[in-house]
Amino acid sequence: MQMAAAPTTGTFSWQQQWYPLAPVSYLPQDRPTATTVLGRRLVVWWHAPSRSWRAFEDRCAHRLAPLSEGRLEPVSGNLQCTLHGWEFGPEGRCERVPQADSPQQGAAACRSARACVATFPVQEEQLRPAPDGGTPGVLLGDWYMRDLPVSFDSLLENLLDPAHVHWAHHGVIGSRSRGGPVQLNQEGSLTAQDGFRLRLGGQRAPGSTGSAGSTSGMPAATHFVPPSLVWLEMPTGGRGHFSMLFYAVPVSPTSCRFFAGYSTDAVPASVRRLLQPAGALAPVLHAFQFLGDLGAHEVVDGDLIHIFWQEQALRREGGGWRRAYFMPARADRGVVLLRRWLDELAGGGPEYPGRWASAATQPLIAAAGSSQGRALSRREILDRYEQHTRHCPSCRRALATVQATRQALQLAAATGFASAFTLVLIQALLPGPPLGLAPGGRAGGASLPLMVGAAALTAGLGAEALRRLERSFVFVDYVHGGK
Image 1 (cartoon, rainbow, N blue to C red):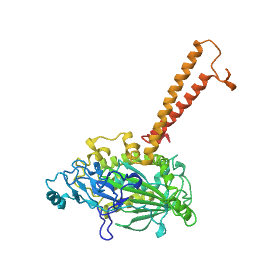
Image 2: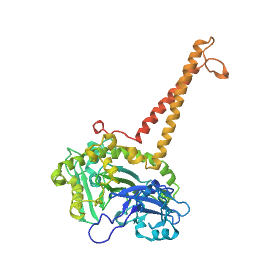
Image 3: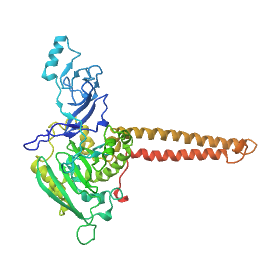
Image 4: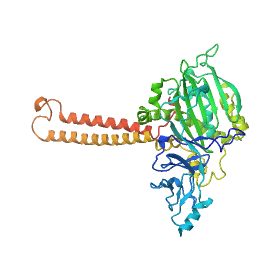
């Protein structure tokens, strides 16, 4: 889902662009959802009568209470503020003031422009660019979304830097043995509205000689499409393409929202139909989206520690990136072009409202590590639960299932060990043959206490395995030195 509209002419305007808000699967239709873009708090809600999504500024016209804490009135379909019951229609106009002293006063209040809330255009879109103007690829699964405690521009730097992959993601999606020079060549011009495009010329392993070797696994083309999209285009053989689509959405000066999706146009039409949102495979892909998200976490975590502390160092350094960075190789061309685009064509970076540091956005600043000069801990930087799991329906369901199963196995293990101990005690105190089982119900065979204890041990090991899996949804420290 996207918000706002982009101008077709003139200088770049941060306030009049389309920005991704959330995957539709993340948005419940029975209640409003809060989000933030460019320091502005928004409420996204489903207007059932028109069957469309709406986005308002997240404050009631009455006394500025958050409309995201409101409810959807089932009869009218309006968004109702739960502080005093004021209702707002799909166009932002107030349609009911319960406290009005008379019907005439209520009608007059609803007609007042001061009773309206600010609205923003919204559209539901799959966000699949078309390679070289061809047919857009089909999205493989759902989008991955994660809130990050780093700035929009710092995240974009990382996404436009293919040289880091074999170093920062060694053993995950890269290998240090393949790291080396990356020949990035600019194609076309650097423009305010269209950004820039890079073509990968080649990559050599350290110590190799001769011309650049194979670039297998590296994007053939990298597009930066302002304000948010980094599109890595990778040939799949023949005429098909595989695309990695990354969106960086500015939330505050020290935080952003990251989206990742993958698409391809190299599938038959029959498979394409199955992968469409209404296709037969869509429910299965959504149900098991958490598996892809856990893999994405490990990649993001490998970058996030670097990006966070790099950004802190740049802020302390002062003087800007030209003074602080030393980038002699062509591998950094994407970073240079991004910084030039920001400085020369986009006013130096995103435009945030002057009140961005007010109480309404203070939690965002605290989450980004700049409140009261306190640096974030590694656990806060890499907090998978707050940044992703609590928002993602697939991961929430998977985590709840894992927790319930673990608790059941823990109970079974405790009960089993207690039962095995009781059986051993009974066997020791009472005369007669050892308790056991044999064919036909005869005594003998395997010891019953041993069998019960083995089952309890199996349940305990299963519970421990699920406890480790449970942590994958919450926090896993990423230590590069151990990779």
